[in-house]
Image (cartoon, rainbow, N blue to C red; front, side, top):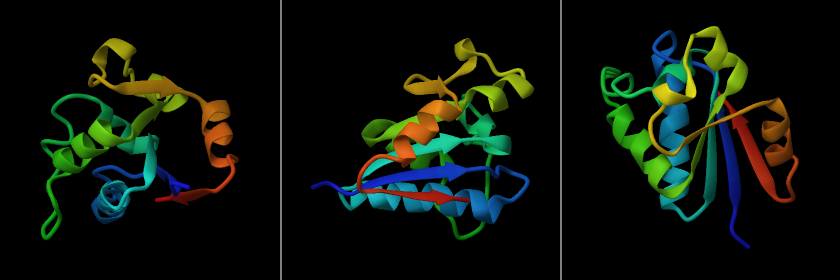
Length: 120
């Protein structure tokens, strides 16, 4: 059985270490063979928009856009609908492969059998 990991990241450039840690853990889990779903909420919502992760910098951390792209390529990347609406982010603004989804979809994922959920 494949391990399933759901990572919810609530921090963006406002808390760069916490943000980078969430993306790093998700990408490493994916590379290790886990099924990974990442949820962007709060200020992390901006990383569903082109150019935002490319502008993020944190010393001694991998480029955030590379971690995000790895998650997009091998996992699932969701953006909280309410968080997007509060920031004026619309579906047309999103990177290809990012889905808008709400709390019901998040709860459905984390309550699945054998799922480990982490919140940063």
